[in-house]
Every structure is written in C-alpha cells, then in structure tokens.
Image 1 (cartoon, helix red, strand yellow):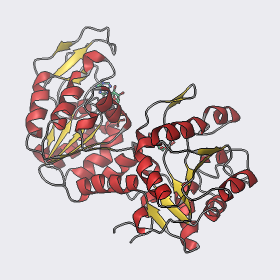
Image 2: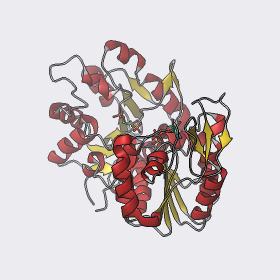
Image 3: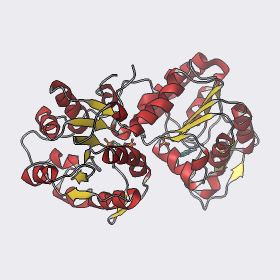
Length: 404
Ligand SMILES: Nc1ncnc2c1ncn2[C@@H]1O[C@H](COP(=O)(O)OP(=O)(O)O)[C@@H](O)[C@H]1O
Ligand SMILES: O=C(OP(=O)(O)O)[C@H](O)COP(=O)(O)O
C-alpha cells in the first residue's frame, strides 16, 4: 500500500513535526559520517520552502546516565545541519516544557528548529524509558506540538518508540496527517522494489561476521534471488556444513544444521568462496597467503575471499539488474584483507543499467572507504532497519505512516 508523502500534505503555515534519524557518530563534539544528515535535508528544505515551520526530533545514542546526556546532546548536529543545508537551524536544549513550547510559538514560516535528543526521556522519570518503551503520553505530548507529522527516520523504522510510532498514533487519533519524508520514500522504493519486485537477474551479496545476523535475509531472499553470493566470516559455517576444512576461521557450531538446511533450500543459488586469503593471526601484521582451493589449513584463518572467488563473484554479477549487498567479504578494516570487498564492490559499481543497493553499517563504511560509494544507486541510511526490511519484516516506523 502506497504511503502518504510529504508532498501530498499542505504544510504552509503549519507546525510540521519531523522525525529524522540524526543518530550519527560524534567524537569530542565533532560529527563524523554525515550520510543521515545529508539524507534528511531534501525533506527539511521542502517543508521550509513551502512555508512550514520545521520542528525536528531525533534520538542520538542510548541514554542510561547523566554522563551519557553530556556526551549525547544533539547540539553539534544542529550546527552541522546548518552548515550542510545552508539554512539557519535553532537548537533548543530540551524536548519538553515551556522553553520548547515558547520556541515553537516564536517560529515563523520556513524556520527550522531541532529539539534535544528524544532519548533524554529514557531516564529520570517514573515511567522509565519513556521514549524507547513508547510511553503513549510522551507521543501525545509531542503530537500536541504540531499540525502535521512527517516521518523521515528510516534508520529508526525498526523501532517502535514514542518519537516515531507514538507520535504517529496520537496524530492519527487527532485526525492530523502522518506522512513519509522523501528519504523514507526513497528507502522504501529501492529496498521495497528489490525485495518485492526485483528486476532479474537479482543477485544478493552477503558477508560480515555472523550467519546468525543474516539468517532471516537468506531465508527471505532465497526464493527471490537468482544468486546469493556469501563471503566474509559467515561463509565458513556454510563451508563447514559442506564438510570442508575451515581451520581457525569464524565458525558458529550451532548454525551448521541451519546452514545445511539453507544450502539445500537454495540449491545452486548459494555461491560460496572457492579460495581464501588466510593468516595465522587476526592482524594486519600477520603474513597473508592465498589458499589453492577451498580447504583451509588447521593453523590458519580465512580473513578475505581469494582471487578465484573474486573472479567467480564478478562473473556471477555480470549482467545483474538488481544487486543488494550487506556485509563485507573479509576483515576489510585491515588493508591486507580488503581486496575481496573492494573488488566485489567495484564490480557492483561497474554494472551498467542495474540497481545497486548497499545496506549495513560496515558495508556502507567499506563502500565509502574504498571510494565506490558514488557508483552505487542507493546507500541505505539504515543498518538494522535495512536488514529487517530485507528479512521481509513489517517495520513499525513505516507501518505507522498513513496510507494514501
Ligand atoms: N573472514 C572474516 N573473519 C573475521 N571477521 C570478518 C571476516 N569477514 C568480515 N569480518 C568482519 O565482519 C564485520 C562486519 O560484519 P557485520 O557487522 O555483519 O556487517 P554489516 O554491518 O555490514 O552488516 C567487520 O568488522 C569485518 O572485519
Ligand atoms: O543507528 C541506528 O541503527 P543501525 O546502526 O542498525 O543503523 C538507528 O538510529 C537505531 O538506533 P538504536 O539501535 O540505538 O535504536
């Protein structure tokens, strides 16, 4: 069912509450990766330029103590948003009460306000985690501050919290519009089409550390994908399930039966590594060698896919029309073991006439640090959210947006 979009709603002269995901890395007050801030700017600009008063809400990190509050203020994010958008952004250091309400009442059409971290509501009160446990009274309070609610926080869509689902519920009960922002719309379009309506050949590339993180994705995508390429640490449990020697490589003993079951269900759709870059230690200083074949000596661990596997994965990707990638092919943070991730990412970037999508914090970091990010069609702003979407789950943050 198509969701109501911000451009379907009249925002002129309205107080427009907008949930964004500004949960960005901050170190010593300096904002690191800005993908999520940049991603939210089109919706913020649209509402501002169409005469709405923009009232932004976001969480940042997880708040368990007053110390956390000091480290996790959204103030540096307000400054970064102002710098990146070129529009003035007023930061309000609270998210409840007179100071906030006065600041909202003083807004003129087109103004932008960011209130303090919504998860400051998770401590120092009788309810407990008011934000993260979705205290309905908090959602009602925030909803009372606006005329329209726009949810542009895809990265938070797998959470059912007061600042996304709580506000939506209260707004709808009050007969006020709840719509998706453009970032949310884009994420649903790319990930949704890939999962529900992929242009074939559809190739899924899965990697990263653990099988257990990706079981749901494999199960959901086996019937939809033409090929599932599995690399990274998760590959070795599958190879062990096939009876191969995997040495000291990452291995989840309790997932071997499941791996066998998935291999059987997938038939020849699952493509596993045929050679590896191995080392005796998990270290960039360790000597790295390439195995001849699929078996790994007892005293070695595989930390990247080998050159034959790179070629096999590249060949399988040829002609693909939809590619979804989640998880690196090796321990790419160490330069000696980054080649497989780089080459597979490069092959994806070189595909012409294909929709190429990356989800997951580490895969996104890999795509960026390897300089291939701008060759891909879509880099999701959600890690957990994109994974749950690929698993075919209903995400509460999306579900709570009104249908057209
Ligand atoms: N062969 C391997 N052995 C050990 N660790 C690996 C291996 N391949 C990948 N990794 C590690 O997996 C981590 C990423 O896994 P994961 O969090 O599942 O990815 P994502 O965030 O993209 O979903 C990286 O830190 C990487 O170093
Ligand atoms: O960064 C987020 O998740 P992600 O790292 O899985 O993408 C979201 O903002 C959700 O944050 P949370 O996992 O603290 O609820």
